[in-house]
Length: 151
Image (cartoon, rainbow, N blue to C red; front, side, top):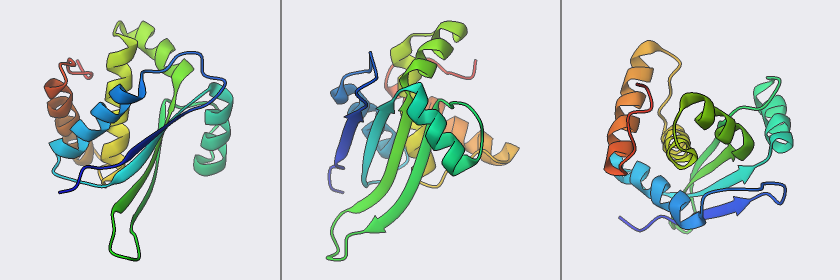
């Protein structure tokens, strides 16, 4: 299994975001935790960009904490698999972390893991799907020293 390439982009209007090395570490832990591999991009954005993305692609008003845009393609030359993009709204993560009494870093870690699992085909549309996805999230986050986000 090749080491995934994980690009990190931080929008210019974002005041605070975890270091790229942490975002990559959390994404790799998610991939390792479910035995997947592939390249992806993590983009940390402000509220305006997330509102725009949520409106255009989900037809929902307002910001959301994380969106995943899966592509799951292999380079024509048989090269690396591209999973897609995970977009995280930094201001909303900070507000949610404060409201939920957890660190911003731990909440970011959870959302990176959550978003990567979506890129790998996991979902939470049904109770059964949610149970499987949440079990993976909790196990992966535990390897990172992050408490169960669902407690």
